[in-house]
Image (cartoon, rainbow, N blue to C red; front, side):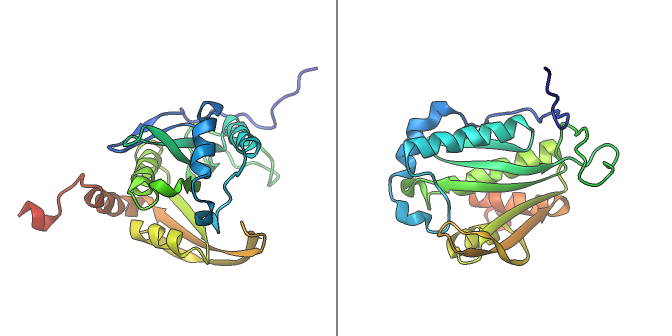
Length: 228
């Protein structure tokens, strides 16, 4: 018996994204040992972030991400820190929505989707304690945003954080993302409480200013004062 897919997916091409100090590689079980080592460094930094603790949990985490990727709904990456040549965490473009083609009817029907997402989220980002505060996260976001806005030409990128996660919220706001609001009782938190979530977005017309700000912070672009 042949079981048909609930929807036809023309997935966006999976790529490796390379920067000065970071390379984002397609997430796979080949990175399992490095991911487990990274997640084991100092787990006190994951108070508001779900990060697999054991090898079995990490394997399930990677396999689940790869299954979602096969459906064209997410693009997960392992973060390789070129300074150490180690995988030090993970991130992904997720909740990929495809607005091309006719609107499905009735609502909720899964129809054909295009190969280029129209909007996406950046999420499931975590880093080893040794890579936090080093610029690895900033360059990873720059690479993901560049792919989304310049290759896919998405209309919007959404970023979310537990409303209590000051560290993540400061990092998101430093990108120049707009706070859309706080959704109360949004989901189950990493600490098993009911989580309020801060929603941020960057729109395509805002990307050039966000890109230039990131390039300055990454040392890829001179400021006006430096150029003078």
